[in-house]
Length: 526
Image (cartoon, rainbow, N blue to C red):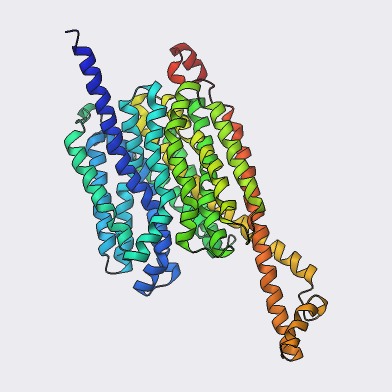
């Protein structure tokens, strides 16, 4: 009898890590797919003979469907249990990947991407909920740090892997590479995961109106953000998106105010700690997407690197981020999230501040070494905050909390990219006008063109040709200089965004809430 308890503890311990490994494989597969596609869009466009406006729906369709399906994860978990939902979502994602790889035309590819999003929208929140359920609160930081290795490393490795696969095997390979991982996850899940179908009386009715209004808000809002730069922020199309998003959000709040079983449990925000974690997650996500959005553009447009070279320059920092995640989770279990998150936020600020000095002649090392600081900073803000958010709510609501956190990341990421892109464009136009005026790049006032024109005259061009060449050369130089300064300004702007995100960090607890007494923890959540 004395050996029974240790044996049971060993079995429970082994099962926890079986769940963790299965969840890591599936969620990394889905996370990788969020960034691996972008680099192959030109190849898809050439293969299908379509325009960039049409091919963008391969990304946009997935993003919109993914965001819409995330809030449904908790309801399906209550109906099916986490085991069957996770296995089913993995199977759907895998089938969607196969259909993407075999798609004969663009319409089929977009439809298959939506099917992928149906599975992917469930995988991450349910995976996080499963890890939360099997690990005790005091160990969740370390467990979520290990799980986060896949979630964070997937998008970071996507451009590098996507560039290599596309170059060597064609764009279809970026989808077909998911098949062995999806099949492995399904088989391991069927063999090892325990059944957990909830009893019938625990099943909640579906919040149809809440879901429809939330879906209207998400689709209109994200569509406006993703298309604003192309359509024009003051165009009728984008203004319509904003109006529909506002209407959807207001109607969603009205519908949920009298609803007992909500598609999104708004009572979670009664916890001050959970609310702080959501706000910190939003700010941190902007920082994460700032590098994945701004850096590749800078390296390819101004430093002359191709897609694969850009991905390789980001790879060392991405690997460090993956390695730092378990350590940061363990530190969060020991110390709580507040000071770790502050250190992480200041580290990200330092990373963004350093990049304000990049130019077209910067070395590879100038790009690489600040990403090490960024990686450690993000790691310190991810696992401890996720663990604290899930510890701040009852375990029975972990799926709802996971959905809210993942939805926050999706919306904040899209918002961050849109804001940074808009600011980048504004600063580039500002600097171009300033530099052009200072260089007198005008045929009406040709004083600034004279040195360049004289060089062209020496090569045998006519007077008119020389000033035309000088004007084009000067405009090109001014454009490059304006772009560099605009990127530098945008990196600095990103650093300021992270500083603002430091404010809710002070709402986080200084200790791991899993170690607090019930009375103290309850007082902190009031």
